[in-house]
Length: 310
Image (cartoon, rainbow, N blue to C red; front, top):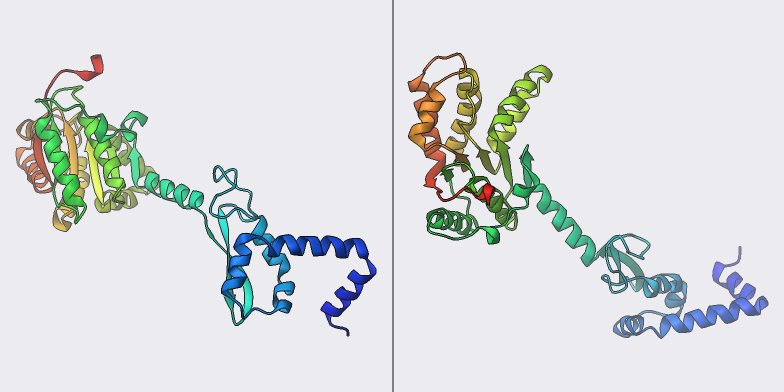
């Protein structure tokens, strides 16, 4: 059997038009500035090796390099969407490889950051909150200071205590949670935000499909747990002690922070948690929950006008 190269050469000689087109393409490829530089850096490559891999060199020439011909990941023109070609040599042979382009790296980073904040029934406005949008005034001065302190400390190691924001309706307590979560995600710290009344209903519904233990474990081990509007509705003693108590106990023992918002300060919340939905008052058990809250968070008041009416 004749070698492929000699057979191809004979065919080219017999087909003048093809030969002319081939030589033109070869000339264009070898005169490409990037390919010329590559070949000059590897003088060990033989003419035979270059000709054998002309199709690889042509592919490299026609592809976008690190998004220079693509406006976005969706508009990528390359054979492998979101990947940029690289020429390399190994054992005096030419190899064409692909690596993630800038657009794909940026897209994946953004997607990863979006996944760092998971929410249970939180409005879009809160999930898009930003620390830059928090207005600084005397009523929020302390809350902002504590927020900034936590974020700064988290850069070198996650603090064991979050913050317990309390104050009247509409002063922006929940917005603080969203803003903190978004700021933490920039340092790749994940957050789980829970709206307490819906959380109670979610757990009750989980009893029907046996997913309750899996969900509780998830809340226990979330890097940063945020519970919004604790004390907003009466709970069963079972939920208070077996669910909320269990989650807080685990996080207290593991040194994992919890953030809260509430209309009640901790003394008022203790009274609220002592009342079960069956009318009983259990002050000792409520006190245990409050002690765990104190271990995983620091009480901070937010006051001011109702911003939802402005």
